[in-house]
Every structure is written in C-alpha cells, then in structure tokens.
Image (cartoon, rainbow, N blue to C red):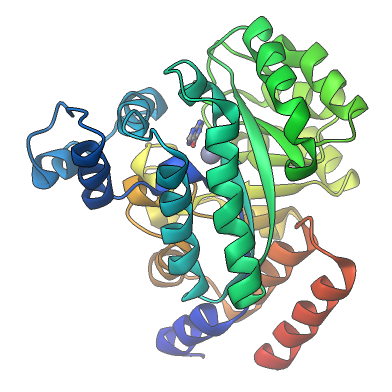
Length: 338
Ligand code: HPA
Ligand code: ZN
C-alpha cells in the first residue's frame, strides 16, 4: 500500500496541464486591493480579511456575484498582464507545463474596457511564460451565458482582429435557465472561424444541457460535466466521442456541487472510462491551485496511484497541445509512475 505522502510527492512533481481556469478567478484579495488603490476604485469591502470572509458560497450564483465585483478593478493592460503573470508564476512552481486559460471579455467590455486592452495584457504574460519557462498555452474566449445571444455575437465581432491569439471559445456564468442551445448560432459561427468549442455543462445544470452541448453545439470538450453521471446513455456517448471533462474538485466543494470531498465523483468518472481531468477553475476564490486540488483528492477521496496516473495522462490527452510535446510528457509520466 503506497503512502499518501508518496502520492502527494508524485502529484506535486509530475508534469501536468491546467485546462479549466478563469483568469479573473485567480484574482487574490491582496492583489485586488492593490489594483483598486492604484486605479482609485472603491471595493465594497473595507479590508482583505473582510473580503476573504465573504468566500463562502451556497451555489454558483453567490460566487459569480462576488467574481464580477472583483474583476471591476481590472482597468489597464498592465493589470491584465500582472494578474495573468502572477497565476502563471504560481502554477509554473507546481510543475504545470501547459495552460488553457479562459477570459470573460463581456465582463470587462460592459465596464468600458476594450477588447484589445484585455487580450493584449493576458497574451503578453502568456508569451513571457513561454519564453521564460517553455510553458505552452491556449487562450479561450468565454461567452457569459446570462447575457443575450446578440451580446455574444457583438463580442465575437470584437474578437475578429485578435483571432490569431484565440484558440477556442467557451460558455460560462449562470448555468440554470441558460442552456447551451441559447447560443447555438454563435457557436456555429465560431466553428466556421476554425475555433474549438468547450462549454460549461452539468455543473448545476441537468444532463439535458450536456446532451445539447454534445449534440447541437458539437463541443470538443466539456467543462465540469459532473451531472452526466445521472444518465448512463450520456456517459456512453461522451466516451464514444472521447470528450475530456475538465473537473474542478475544490470548486465543486466550495459551490456545493458536491457535499463532501470524500464523495467527489471523479473516481466514479474514471471507473466509467470518462476522460476526467483535475483543474482549479477559480483558485483565488476556491481555496487552491492545481496541486491543492490533487492534494484534497489524495487526502480526502482515497485516490489511488493508478487513478492519479490516469488523471495526469488525461490532462495531456485532453489538452490542445503539440503532439510531440504531449508524447514527451506522457512518456515522462510513465517513467515517474513506474
Ligand atoms: N462556472 C460558471 N461560470 C464561471 C465559473 C464556474 O465555475 N467560474 C467563473 N465563471
Ligand atoms: Zn469554470
């Protein structure tokens, strides 16, 4: 029987990717207050401690209300750059070698922050991480599903001059009441532009929303996807299509998608052959980055060595990464776990 401390060592040392990360969700309270001060914006919290005390959520919407407030202090290109570079520095130290990052342009456009201000800051940090550490990346533009299809189309139009920096499009924010089919036409337009598609589905929403994502939006990946486990036929379909699920353990706990980490469904997903991966979603709000997510699974969900290895491999199989680079890291994982 392998010791938990050995598994933790493996998890921390193994190369890994992060495939589900909202850059605005990496906004640490300290940095938020720093930016608020220099941009002369007042937050409705008087101290870092008071803000952190608000990090207790009973559902997705309660979190989103705070998340949108937090991002309101992002004003300049330098802000977006510093936010992104701080995240990349952190995960580089956790042996993350490839990242796929969401950003929410509508959350900034509606505050008068231009598309180019946002993307140029984020992209500069990603290129610097590539140069400094050889980290590879993809940038994913995400549409806010509580807004209209028209707003999504307007956003896509603003993205056109920047398409060479954007690899994929996503769909996030309040899931219930905003099914994927609401955005069918905009995702068709994105596919026609050559963009990959990944959609948050089955976090709070029913299996029906995941069916829509697969059948109608023809997604290349599914974000969260937890509730597919309620429908055996859907599980079979996801496996048949070889769709990766970007699962977020600490997020699931914080947003009450799961009651207890000991009951986290990621093991069941693996046992059913689903290509589940581990990700941090909004680490500043949910209590941890990549290694912390692996740690809670090892310490509280009885993750085995084989399961850990599978998760590590899935993180590369499901990534939009250069095939030679993928194989290099898959081989490293085999060696590390031998
Ligand atoms: N779900 C939906 N929308 C989001 C999330 C999430 O976990 N994080 C940031 N926006
Ligand atoms: Zn998310």
